[in-house]
Length: 572
Image (cartoon, rainbow, N blue to C red; front, side):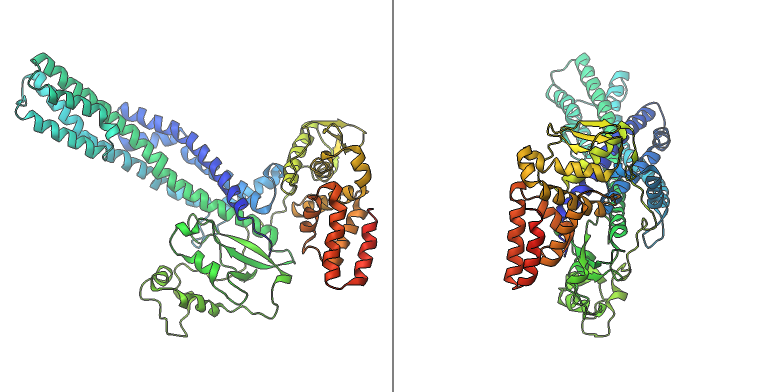
């Protein structure tokens, strides 16, 4: 099975969602300020919230932020850098992600987001209104205390004052939900009055009551600020992030399926649990990862795969299973999943099927009919599969200097996904109309205005290989260097949908590909090319000789070993 870099997947999605959270943080502050300003100017809560959401275009900006996260996730799943995708293709991808549904309710993202507007607004209104209702008695008690004394009517006796202040303190703590930091200024004013009740003159007592009233007003203002932040930065954020996370994972899956589903070498997929899945309760993801329908735990032919994600916040993914990794005599049998289901304890069965629906001893019991929200096994469909993705810089033609720098940055980033060495490229390009294209010994790269991604990627790989040595070393090992760089360039280009153009080094790259095929060093040419390239240049040919000897001589394949040795000698 293809090695699944789960941490890389999680990091990709984590960084994308981190960017979404950052954009959300920047969005909510103006909304909070506008709500508070409107309420302080006399608007009721509902009017203030509606006006603030409209004036700041909250829902439109949220929709764009979620769409941005989905677009980046789809690119990550497809294995393409977003900045390489040409504008027409980017527009098509975004439109597909917004307009086409993937959920059982057939609701697309645009409809889902539109439907949440009323819910989100009401949550904000309810949160702020609740806080204001709870702080109102505090302010009223403080005002009654001050106004009663100031008017000479309804003055609270000194004997009753301690109990009154105690009630005021209780109401404040209740309104602040025990947040003593929030009630501290009011607490200090109440405490000072309590301590000096017998000592205070009438004028001083009036001043103490005024201090309590002022503190109560500040307390109510602080409660408004806090409740607005809670409404937008906690409750509404959670709702928005749940949509962004779930839709981003699905978009990653769309890109992944678009990339792999039609590959003839891909037989199917293996379900891979999220690294943090153990932190949540037992659910359908555990079932998908552990049931055996005929090919091993969690392994499914690509025509019968459970859909992803299984639930909100789901971070599970699929791992590629190749044709040569599967027993062709095995057959799909959904009923074999009963072996795993029957092994579960009662609580886990209840979490999957609900109470009273698990007839353990009935052999004819169809688990698929009783599994909650189960949509069966099927051929995964990508919303992006019909799109022919066009990349910037794929065409061999004349480009502007700024475009070539952009292409160079993208190819350098791609090279870094496969090369272990840090790039020695200085970041400078020498671009001319008719010069030669090469990695220079001063660590800059010489290019022509007529260029393309494939040519630039070749030089970016050199910057992570021969650039660590001198001209003399290159002279000794130039054949294996150019061949291994070009082989990896070709294999990366196939994987990343970069247009491959002919090169003087193609024949030698084909010799390496033939060596791998005959000697059976690696299952894929990309794995072989990556391993070979990452061997230090002075030891690269020796490593290849040893690898071939180890594989072929142990298998007793002497005749083929001689033939492969002749191919290797081509690089000596």
